[in-house]
Picture 1: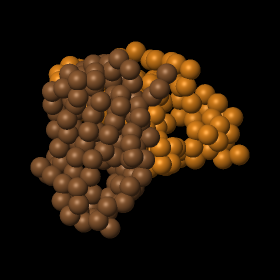
Picture 2 (picture 1 turned 120 degrees about the vertical axis):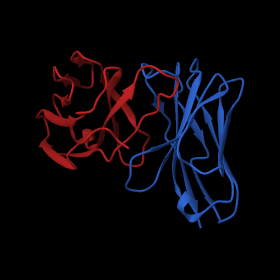
Picture 3 (picture 1 turned 135 degrees about the horizontal axis):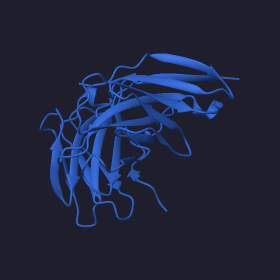
Picture 4 (picture 1 turned 180 degrees about the vertical axis):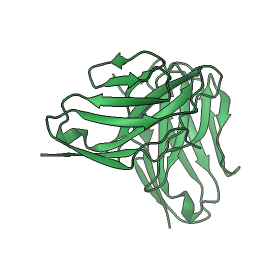
Length: 112
Length: 114
């Protein structure tokens, strides 16, 4: 079972920041927070991951609360091509079974 | 550099048949995982292989099997196909098998069972 909770959908205007929330209140100390997205009929695309600290890359920023029970993915300047299903996933960093457990994700619609 | 490649991209089978799906990982990646995604749901974990050994298995029947070859490519086999096996089958590769390794997914093989 997925260990994260995300709203089913949200939208934002093109050029604006998109802030996608995720709750993971039962996260363990040895679990990363991962974000993937999936554009219709394509394979999931890795966005970013983090353990405790905030992370930023060329695609997005990941803000993790101090208690690690929630996080926010920020797309700083959303474009129409960012319309996709975004999955927030918690994943153990130790152990041989490092599967990704996908939930239903959040559908982000970017409007012109 | 080539990403994760999967073949075939689309295929149609009838109930009771057998199917083999193939995956070539990114060069240098030693771990391959398989996921099933039915319409409207997130991907579900089927298998993980690392260095040719099975490292994890999801909640799928024994009709599903997989293997990894010495060149780290992988096959997913499904026997006695059911209508419910219709799905997008995704392969992902990573350098290692721990959670610190990012999984890179292929475009998938779309299986339709009639």
